[in-house]
Image 1 (spheres, rainbow, N blue to C red):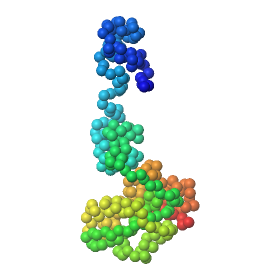
Image 2 (image 1 turned 135 degrees about the vertical axis):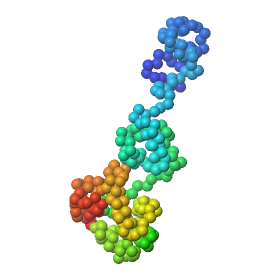
Image 3 (image 1 turned 90 degrees about the vertical axis):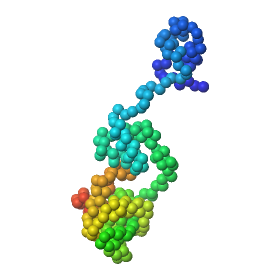
Image 4 (image 1 turned 135 degrees about the horizontal axis):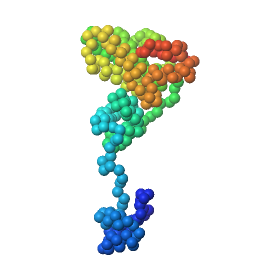
Length: 277
């Protein structure tokens, strides 16, 4: 069997075993095997012929404190977010956090793979490649103190830019007005997992968490939440660390023909106008 020894080793496994079996003095062993007496003394004391691991007995970070690591581990276990999403979210609280430091921290605690945290995760299915401006739509009913409203939600399949509108009635007319207001082509805007997940996220951040006395209160909070999500609330791994609005502005610089207005001139929170194709 092939022996694995560190680069500075002066003895083989056979020599080490012979030292451990021998009753000769350290000086005699030193002359016989051509080694330092301290080397002979070291291997005579050991119960194995394998090299011990170098470095600290308990691996720890030279960059992160114990508090930082505890925060990282708790965040990962609670959110189950991928590595890059964890990095973008945690850098706001741990400014010196880098991707390698985060990865090593998760490895030390045995949670570098999401399957290790969740007990197995199904293989992800990738979407077909679509141009920017392909929206998926969903609708949900929301109840507050003043009465019932219907929430239209649309999300761009590529940029993840989301738009919403609250209406009193949900019918074909209000749905078409919602689409036309967003300046996108009505091209099979069926619901899918992305928009359904976004719909749940919006309701969890608004009507399921807060009490609203009026429709106006809900509309104001909803507008603030969507502005935060689209512009600076969260950087996304699928967009290579950009927010939805930043990604739209990036696409505009390379493919301006897909837009009917310059998104960089829009007030944060407004929807960029995509060109119908």
